[in-house]
Amino acid sequence: MRVPSLLSSRTLSFLSTSVLLAACGGLSDPGIPETNRYGAINIAASGVSPTSARADATVIFFEAITIAVPNSSLQQSDNCVFSTVDTLPQITRGQNRAGETVSLTAGSTTLQLAYSDTLKRYATVAGQPFSYNTGDMAQIGIPGNATVFPAQNISVKLAEPILPQPIAVPAAGAPMQVRWNGTNDNSAAIILALRYADPTSSTYANRQVYCEVKDDGSFDIPANGITSFLISPSHLRSLTITRWRTNEVMPDSKTVLHIVTSVDSTVAIP
Image 1: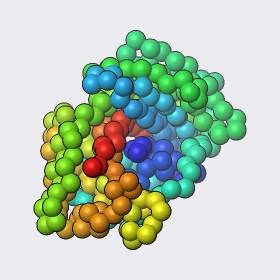
Image 2 (image 1 turned 180 degrees about the vertical axis):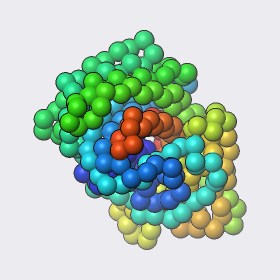
Image 3 (image 1 turned 30 degrees about the horizontal axis):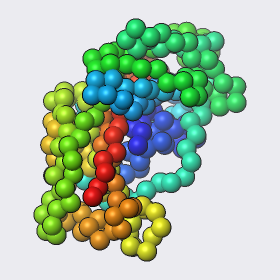
């Protein structure tokens, strides 16, 4: 799973690589006024050790009258919903160019992200992720284009690797206990996506229990939310835990630059 950055439509998706906005509400910053220039930075990682991760980055610029801006610090109350699983291929595309290259520094690594005329975005080279360690910050430098987007810098603390504990399938009528290495940092939040097949004749995991929770290391998925999961074929059951963190700046009254960092781990379900 990948958690969202800013987007105006499915074709402008860092957000569309996740079900975050589609499945749940209440994560957006209500203080963002109507604007028309947006920059969205997505740093999506996978853990390679308890203290390090590898990540790819994309940066897009686009125009819209107003959109919802995801904010991890607002996701500090635990709740779950049912939703379908979006299996459509997702491609992140932008609209505008804001300079020749975008600089990205993560820990001791500095990269220059080139612009793609085809996808109208800046991105790390496919198949060449960068590495970072727990506690590292990412700093992004936007060179700017006077007619599209102003020069601007933004930073975010990179999402720490998720270390889930083994999951036990509960008996009917009992909740499912999920435990992980919580940060207890209210700038971070967790998404739990418990996927399964419903009906049992489905050939793929088409449904999920989607939970937005605090990053405190402990959450019990309610018993009434896992009834269908318990009868799903075991090979179609999975749990993905995603940690995400956001930041945003407003260079002027009509411009928003937003960054999101995420890292996920899929847990085997017996």
